[in-house]
Image (tube, rainbow, N blue to C red):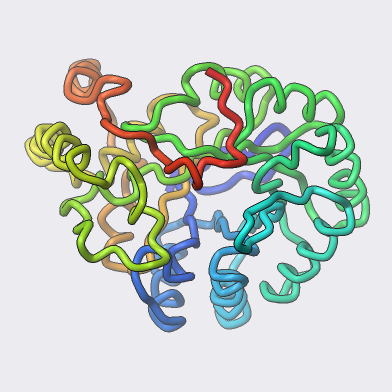
Length: 327
């Protein structure tokens, strides 16, 4: 696995990380044994950057990762997040008391005394971002976190935060069908020396060998109410993506590996974190860093899937609350 730096002064990590939300059952029921096997396969493939969060299954994902760390004792870079308060009235809390308490809970579940990267999962607009960074700097100085990151923020927020104290990474959704970060965020990260970490780089499963079956989405599955997965938009999106799948197969590549390779090819400061709960699915894309595009490949992908091709928003109106929209 190739390596990339996680922001200026940050650790060197595998070019592809592993998003661990699926271990909490968001995309289908799973158990700890399946999660442990998936983590083993990822590590054996050279993946040493793991991303989780306190709210993934209300700590379930972190507990699975913690059990694996205790058993395998690997050398990995750990990232977790806090800032979203789950409940009937979804809200965000970036106060020092809340972030400290949630971080301590995460450390306990993970079985570690610090994490390499601690994200603000969503920005709390009631607090100046500079005040939030002050809290994060305290956590860095205390040795509880190696650096901080931000999730789903605008370039303007990143600039303000970074001016207060250097940010290590920004995480946002980015894939062949979600392109908003191209309108300023990816370039701002490059300018400031901040890693850009695309989550859902496989389009929540559409850039795999088989399209997700919308009829099988469980209660926790965020795709259940996602506009792009509702008809008639989903049918149009599948039809648009089918020719891309044929292109991948014609080149001898899996669909998921090609979609990840496209992200890696965009810029050297991008570190995508695809998620899966199974070792079998992971092996479909674990060697994506070995794919080298020609100019003709890039042109064909751009022709098949131009920016904005997808029908429907990436989130429902309820899900998008807290995301900073800047274009």
